[in-house]
Amino acid sequence: MTVAVRLSLIAAACAFAAPAGAQLAVHRDLTYAMVKNITESAVEACQAKGYHVSVTVVGRDGGTLAQIRGDGAAPHTMENSRRKAYTALTFRAPSAQFAQQVAKDPGAQQRATLPGIIGIAGGLPIKAGDDIIGGVGISGSPGGNDEPCSKAGIDRVAAQLR
Image (cartoon, rainbow, N blue to C red; front, side, top):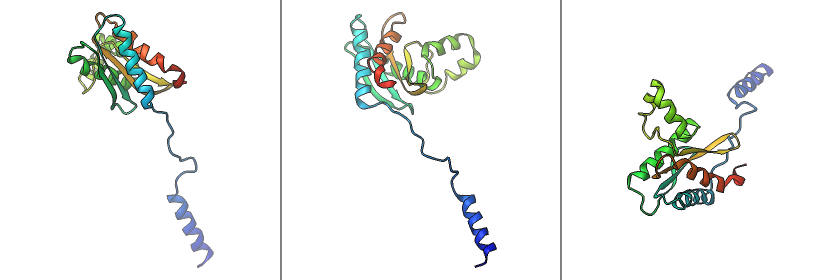
């Protein structure tokens, strides 16, 4: 084999090789213990105020990781809590912020028709640093009291999210 042929084969092999900087993506995910603490703390925070709520935690892919229907919570609160958590994850912001956008922006109104999205306060993104790794949503308390309970759930694991 001539030097020219060898160089041609090496060049072809290099063309098909992965870039030098290519590597697997590394990210953090919620653990079972974290999800359990978030859901239980969120429900307990609302129950302490006399509210009958449901809570959902979704992972970074939007799939449900845990869902609790608290004592006395209405059946529809399960779906509402899931949609709030999913909305917060998807739009990387509290579902209350999306609700405000829906009230005044036709584009947001169209996005509100997407499956799993809802423009109601009560959902918060779960962040590990600047990375959104999930969402938590509460449904069932009166007058916008869901979000503080969602925050109580996140606060319970805040040290693990740093």
